[in-house]
Image (cartoon, rainbow, N blue to C red; front, top):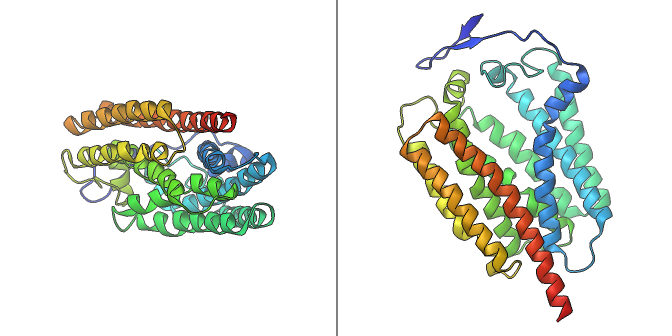
Amino acid sequence: MSAISSPNCPPIPVVRASVFGTRVADYIEIAKLRISLMVLMTVSVGYFLALRGPASYLTLFNAWIGVSLAAIGASAINQWIERETDGRMRRTRNRPLPMKRLAPSEVLIFGFVSAAVGVIYMLLTVNTLTAAMTGLTFVLYAGVYTPLKRVTSLCTAVGAIPGALPPVLGWLAAGGELEWMAFALFGVLFLWQFPHFLAIAWLYKEDYCAAGLRMLPAGKSMPHVTGLLAVVYALGLIPVSLLPAYFGAAGMVYSVVAMVLGAAYLAASIGFAWEESRTSARRVIWTSLVYLPVLLMVLTWDHLRLLDWLRAV
């Protein structure tokens, strides 16, 4: 066992992995398939909310394939860029690149090929605007957000942009235009990310500090600052989450659920700001992981229910 450290940061012990995964398992880890599944859920929500006629499930399926390939490519390029910093952090040091189970060149090729195939596939099977926005999402995540993590704590705000675009991609895939409802979906995903990632950054602050990444609090003594920022964003999320109902895309059921979930997310963030601890940070993370899928499922259900009612009258 040895230790890694950075100036003004606590040392982090390094333990070498004793079990090497297969190449398939390593590529699955590079692809971050669990994140891709969450992305596909948000794409689906955007698609169904934009529908003005019968659903084309082939179009939705094609959008899934294109967005998945682009997301996999972004994850691979992200890990290629951060292969050295990943090796300095407890939570990432056993990934395939830091442990040299995969060569950097093959991961780089895998990432760019996956993203390029995804964008081209969407261009051929969905539409030009969705393909262009998918390419923009890839560039913002892999080419802007990832390098900025070494430069400024504002990287979180930049990274929240590609993180909030998947429902917009679904909206465009269904033939929707860039209108206020699409921006409302973007706003919900954009604001939701901040308490979630601020809690993660606080929880792994020693890791980020040792790796030289500028995620708040970046190894500095900033009592309650991270928690207060989480409160601000959780508070702002409540009125933004009600915009789908304001624009007529959902009804009272969704509004009530959005307010209840928003209150729970805000309460968890306030608890984190009041007493920044591992327990309160994890509470924010778990609340966020319940908040988003429940909110989006209820939004989709209420929207489709409202459409059925309008067709019947």
